[in-house]
Image 1 (cartoon, rainbow, N blue to C red):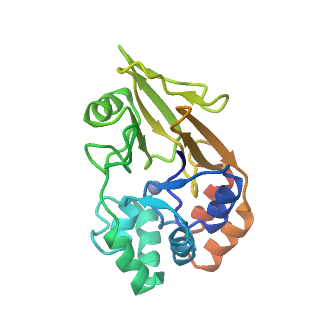
Image 2: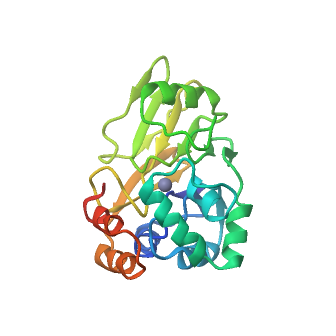
Length: 244
Ligand code: ZN
């Protein structure tokens, strides 16, 4: 089975299309939440993912607020501005669909489970080793895929926790020793924050037990122009060019 792993699309249609075009052959798509918020194409992005032949979805914090399930309490100024715009822009059907997205973690198969923030709390950001250890303890599968931080990261635990640095040089080989556990963020499709503006995604092959983190260039200028034209905060357009 080959999975395309995408997260944090954030209503960026150009980035999503570039990822779908760049992704090698796959059987199923895992969508780890935050389809909307920040970008100018929430409806078009939802239409596009609904057209995927085979996909599993979980919700992100922006999806919850965009659907009206939660208020913007935990959001910063920019996120609040953007999600207010998004709620207005979304069709009632798409808002209702967002509200039906399941909360993570969701177990996908014997190897992998998915969550938006962390397996113990969908809204928690995993940045440091402490959070990573907590997440690894809470996960029910050898590989737990997460999003939310918009920063690619690989944590591996066997006898101790290590971060895997060479995340782009070679596919990660998931060892089958019965004790190694992995916690991986493949990065954000629509709003990368690791200094690389290209859209980020992953390809997981459960037969060869490899996970490859990949980047795809996309038409940033068009995504930016749409954000400006929509009247969204300009900084949301600017940050796409620098990946911050
Ligand atoms: Zn996000």
